[in-house]
Picture (cartoon, rainbow, N blue to C red):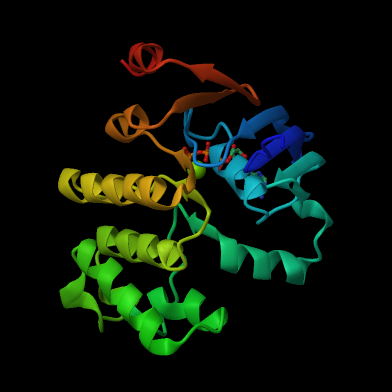
Length: 237
Ligand SMILES: Nc1ncnc2c1ncn2[C@@H]1O[C@H](COP(=O)(O)OP(=O)(O)OP(=O)(O)O)[C@@H](O)[C@H]1O
Ligand SMILES: [Mg+2]
């Protein structure tokens, strides 16, 4: 049987309206990511990395093009079906965390499990385990607003991974973190990939993280190009 890509994007364009004419951010993205693959997306600020990740994760719709996950066109799903699919099968780590301020750390991390209707004790065990690995055992009952930026980022990571999604899309997951926490986040992503064959697409400026991926794609002038790690280092220098 032919292998089906975890993600296939075809001819993706994204145009934003702008008073001085339209802004064409993505100009025809072609991307195939195989199940279990680890891909980094890099590129300068404002080039469209978050825009691309949001399209790939079905959080926004492209102006043109197709996006298939495991052979299914996610753009054919109703908004309701798409959000149920995202909750159950995608782990999205946002550049800005979007945790819910009215709940504490543990509740935020448990939320996808509760929405999916899994047994509460099991969800709680998994959430506490993830939070402990991310160094947040002492912060389970803190309000989100009482956490530091890096702590929020780690809580958001735990929430994204709670249901052991088959596909993780992470936008600067080490963005606000010190070197040690960044390494822990990197290790957790890699372990998830090894243990469950989770497909990873990670937007990052972090060279240590990029170096651990199978492929590095650079977004430039609205298109993706594969670059070697050596080439990336020379571009960043
Ligand atoms: N909803 C929107 N309406 C209009 N312009 C937008 C919108 N969203 C993003 N843009 C513009 O599209 C461009 C790409 O934004 P995006 O957030 O994807 O960049 P990025 O590569 O993630 O940057 P960074 O590395 O700083 O996070 C930016 O110039 C941004 O201003
Ligand atoms: Mg961004």
